[in-house]
Image 1: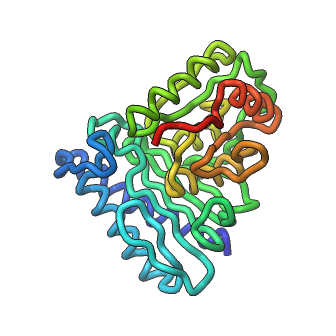
Image 2: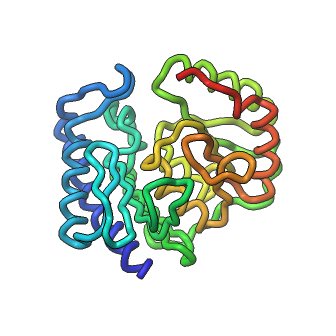
Image 3: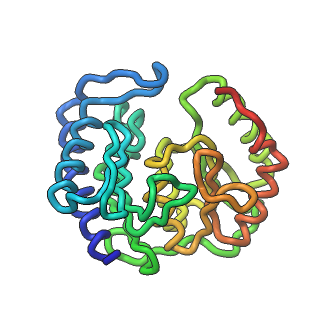
Length: 271
């Protein structure tokens, strides 16, 4: 069953990816703000989510839906689709080719602290890359098996992270980076949490951490990274969630966990 769900996620993600790439070529449609002027949403975000929602409803009418841009619907099947129609909307707005359609299906309530992710696809149409995974079946990039890096010591580790839309939170997050950056090879901030997690899955990054992710920001990428061999979790053994998400091979994970705690990564942050 997980393979069937994975195939469906991939089929629909590719169709949505074609749509947003076409809209990007035509010129990004009207843009509005959500939580702040920095937190933008385009007409293409809404179009992409509407397409994904419609296709899923046709194929799986009893499943729930939990997306970034529209109302959630409950499940009678026990499964819910967690969707980000464009992860990396600011990159999309500026024409930076690092954005993605992200689709995951989870068992249980749409809560990362309790759900069980079953299948996922993240596609970057601008790069022509599609990452996918099913629980217990490994992870792929364009159909080829991928693996996370293993045995990289922290001083040689290339990490990814992300910043919040709130200026106050970004300032706090910069303090964590300042503490950490001298203890690793370097840190990248590329603007798409899902693609950062997929970069861990295929070895482009050795690790990734971020605080404040929404469920749709990491549902698919977390499963893909996990199936590629990375450990994906929060701090102190918690599940990955808005509280914290860290991904790396198990040995590096433990070292980064302590470095992040030393950097104050679990301290109270501005709202």
